[in-house]
View 1 (tube, helix red, strand yellow):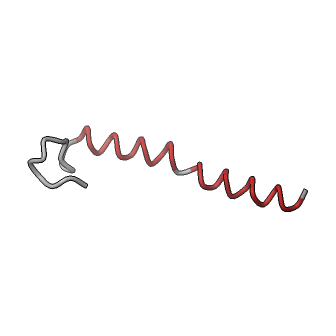
View 2 (cartoon, rainbow, N blue to C red):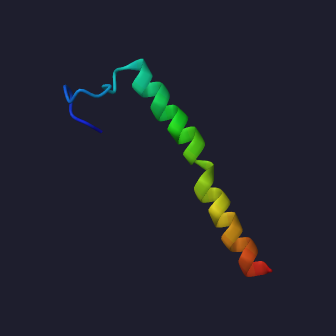
View 3 (cartoon, one colour):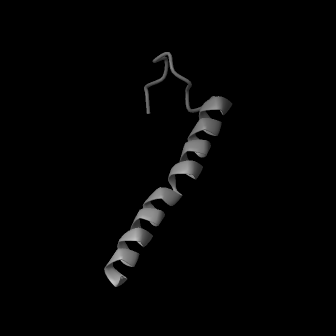
Amino acid sequence: MPPPGAGVATPESPLFEHATQAIATIAAPIPLIHLADLIYLRLV
């Protein structure tokens, strides 16, 4: 997280909050899918 006044959206910014939630929502399933693939490959 950049320090305040770094010229980037601050954590208080609604845009920053929205972007963080969007990234988390998109990225969250990726490790689960990868883990499921690894388990599946071990079983097959």
